[in-house]
Image 1: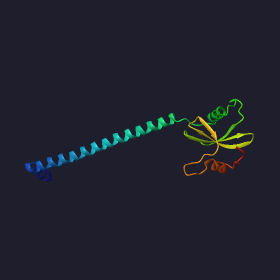
Image 2 (image 1 turned 180 degrees about the horizontal axis):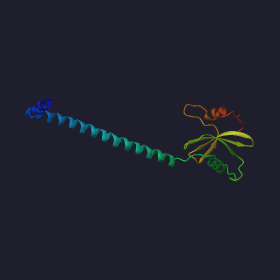
Image 3 (image 1 turned 90 degrees about the horizontal axis):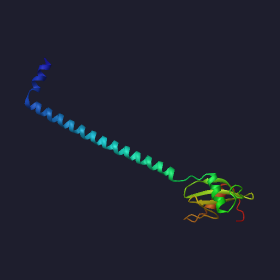
Length: 149
């Protein structure tokens, strides 16, 4: 009985037109939503891919300072025999590709040294832009007495 009533109402042209409009609008809203979702997903995955590529590129382009490479840099800068150096790299305090902090030992005297851009080596005081002596701070942290330089 109820199916006949529903069928009779749906056969009315005014109801059919309203249903077509409602289905068209809801279909349009669904399509717009899917388009935005697809655009977001593509953009998100492209951004993730770009970020992963950049992270992979950073790890391969920036060299890592190891004890062996630090010893090679120090021996080369001091013109020492690399197989039997007098100055030994005791510890790498902070390894960064631009400025690395190391502790060297020569004749049982420890000193703070710096390696810049993985090739330049120097000992002495390094002062930051605020006037703080970074060398003294590292010496204090690692309980190194300030010897004669």
